[in-house]
Amino acid sequence: PASLCGTWDIISNVNLDGYMIALGISPNLRKIALKLKQKKVIEQKGDHYIIKTTSTFRNYTISFRVGQDFEEFTKGLDNRHVKSLVTWEGNKLVCEQTGEKKNRGWAHWIEDDKLHLELYCDGEVCSQVFKKK
Ligand code: RET
Image 1 (tube, rainbow, N blue to C red):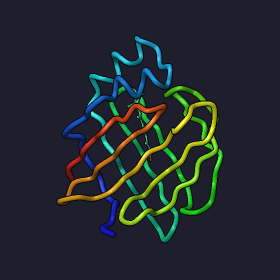
Image 2: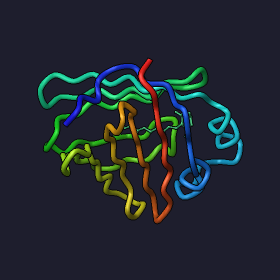
Image 3: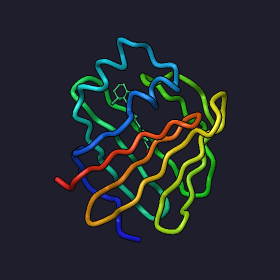
Image 4: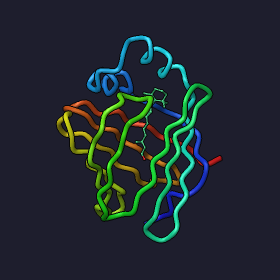
């Protein structure tokens, strides 16, 4: 599949609020998060990925190997501990985040030179699109 690597600027963000509500994020933090212009910085070496979500307010970074589960603490988001596993499903880099919340995870893929990200929690889907910087 096409490389996810690079620096990406958000150009659309649908239902972030529904996703944050499903996570139980406070109204104050939701209000701030909705105003932010998120960026993604994705680095990769072989099966090892570092994905940084950055904004003027707060950053969130994860680091993992495809196919190896890892403990994730969603610091500054909903502050939960989950067990995460990232795998390729066709052209999509898919993460399952097992923990207190049902059907929680995300998928990243490239389509028409854009980075697509879907975030899932408890039946809510947030759809984000980023363009390369
Ligand atoms: C911000 C600002 C503070 C509040 C919230 C945020 C949302 C972060 C999200 C991050 C998703 C990261 C993923 C990484 C995967 O590789 C912007 C940090 C709620 C939704 C999916």
